[in-house]
Length: 244
Image 1 (tube, rainbow, N blue to C red):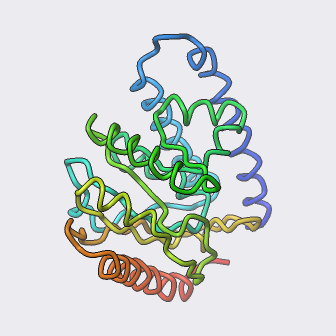
Image 2: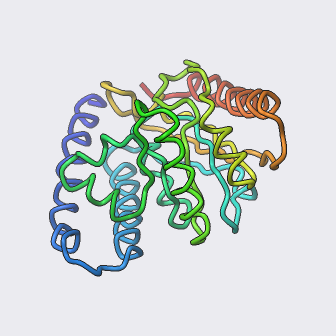
């Protein structure tokens, strides 16, 4: 029964996303449409997915550490375990800018939405040239009042996996000179890549900020230890109580 519910939700999710983008698509190609209109669309779509997750799949969200959410622009360094991570933050934070793989822009309609919203694409094969463009764009978005979200591992990790933290997170931390707020998740337990979605409550946990001014190794060690320790705690607690 749970697998049937999961399969139904997965199909519904893609149909709902495609339909939402189709309804919005005329505004994606009209010059002069304000960026905040597209951001508002993405926020409403993200919130609607949360609603359908709860209604169809029985999957709810628990946001912890909300006292660490900043009112001024900062960098959010987020563990990446699930597709959920790529959009759920739009329903929590006010108009964030995601640093994302450039190839996402090639996804029909959804890629266009990401571009119009003002997310920050990065070509991971172009090295320093791409890094420089990402830093300049991040500064521009932050100067306009937007926080930046980055996945410091650069790719999705299965629950319990640890990928090397890439130096790009230190580059943006050093360049922007703003606090980095680590974000721990256990989303991979409930929405696995290539697997079924599960009912229960996934957690997004905001952790105490890392202030500007640290040297590279100290910063990287502190960031990784903070995120991975918090994620490990979420893994142990939730895997002991999960509904399968």
